[in-house]
Length: 311
Image (cartoon, rainbow, N blue to C red; front, side, top):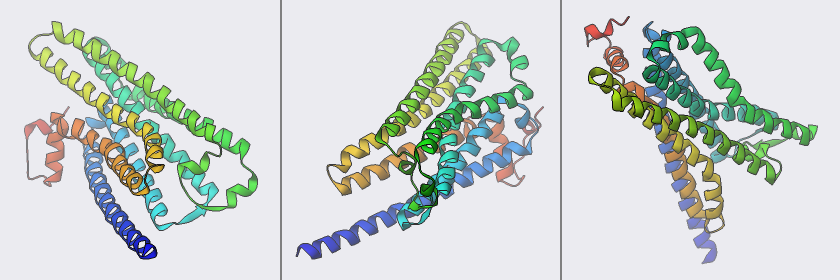
């Protein structure tokens, strides 16, 4: 009887995971299609790729696409128990960890851009040029690469040469050979997000001060910028919570394996895939100019509006 129950339980477990994997594939496909439409719209108008906030928006879209693709590959490899050599796993970890930071760091830069636009409008044109935007993107990638450079340096110093040719199921844990490395990785993550939260709160407070004294159209524009900063903060909060998920999942793993699987799946949907749909919401739908352009190209030019003649 015990053996029969375990077999039935195993079949139920595999069927449950299978349904979950299919749902994830559907969500990933939907988010990638939405991001592809937004990226296409971005490149169709000169105005967008000459304006700092839209360029940074495109960076978040491309970063989210990379994360969705890489995390989905790792999910499928884990589900089908596909092994790969460790050196390839290290390369995947390098890119996934880099773009794990690129999105929240870019969100912080976008909040600071709103701060400059609203609180320092006379200097906005000077500071937020296309050239400075390219420098900003380079700085974003340099800042985002520091944590993974530190972790990989420790890995290269600790791992033996034979480890790189071993075949294993790739996961983030494979790169962390010692328990203290995972604690250090978590500490670095939380330090980064603390700094980013401070900058977003600073932008929020300064914009509120301007909103209180603004009037007419300026007041409307200011409150719109304030709502954008709030949404950036909420998206950053979801990214921060995702960093705590491994500790939560480890606690449930010691209690019950089925509960652990369900919690891990829920965390992946809410805190990994969830933030990826907020970027389209913030700029793809809320931004009037971008929404008109998106509507025009999605409907293959059937929708026409003079507002599309952007300058």
